[in-house]
Length: 468
Length: 103
Image 1 (cartoon, one colour):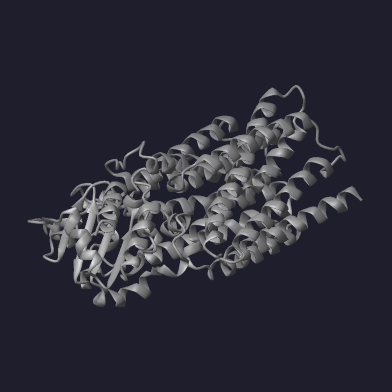
Image 2: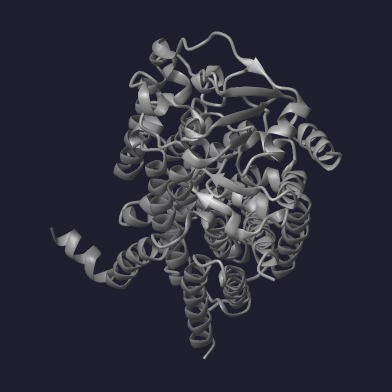
């Protein structure tokens, strides 16, 4: 009876994950979908605590500790998730992802010790393989996510070691060799090999993410997300647990597809992202000497230009996110609308640090959904747009992606802002964007630079416009 | 060959689940508008927190004198909970904003 209840609870969990993910894919049902998945998760967790029995029919012990862990995790997790700024969302997702990876890794450590109680893994190779895969994937995911977190948070810079790719491939080979050695048994002390595997996986996780930067960061987070899914699925195999298996594999496959979708948005292959990291490819920018004179525009001139336009398109980027300028941006849009200017937003799929980052941010500021146009929709409209104002976006409007085959971002679809009559670029300085390359757009005659922090500039623009 | 057949028959159900789940995952996600990519990634992130169940089992089966297993298990439960709770709460916060503009 107890077992039946547990099975039913797990079934509820699995179904809720599937339905939840499905509902998450539609704006109207997304929030409910998230809630369903959370309820299913809760059912599965409590069913495990109270109904799970091991092969000898023993229920779980140490309940006090389990509950204490759950309570600590819930309190800290809720506080962290509630307090985080909307702009720091990508880091937060990366951080939580790392927690899951670490959890999978720890499970593998304990289970390996259990397995080794018998002294040898002979006859249990499959179980051992599952444990080891969980360890490797979980560890890579944890260390990779921590590096991704540090990078997005600005604590860690992009760094490429000499011969990085060879080192990475070498590490991967060592992982495989160690796996085989442990499974064969009798070659060396399995514990030594096991901890060596742990260390190499950790190093791989770090070095794998270290050189990747720029627009590729969301791709990496999404990839690590699917890694953790696979690590969770390994646990599902290990415990013969269907809900862990479905949950893990669902996320693993969905995460992989999401990763590929993101790569497609940048017109690059996954291999290209992982191997040919943006930062390590600067030699390709030889034709990028577009430098030269750029012109600045004053605040009041910008305000006048926009106020007497018919159509203005706002291109938000990461600069808007760091400056927390989403609310004042909405303000600008409203002021302009009052002056009968048609205002729209052009959203590049990889603007910001994650796909949809800009949508989330602007939705927070109550910008109406219909005003946010995706790249394909807005691109034909630039030709009859009077003013494009770019707020802290760079690589996604770089014409080099279209006309410079030597550029590292060549082939990435961009917002064709240069078709508009005027382009105003708000940036903090002339420093290149996250991809580390110059942008010829800034030196075009129709482009004017408006330097300053996005929030400050927008506030001043709004007050200029209000006084007009 | 024999070991493969044995593996296949004993794990038949699991293999079926894995394959169907792979297709389900692909199917579910390919229809997502890019607007929802971030919340979706975050939601999926919370779902793989299901690994917490493994942590609970580890913790619950640890013998009272096996301190290493107890400590590691306890840590795993906390980390897993962080993943689950943090993931769902962050996703909800993102989606809350999408809802507001629908009024």
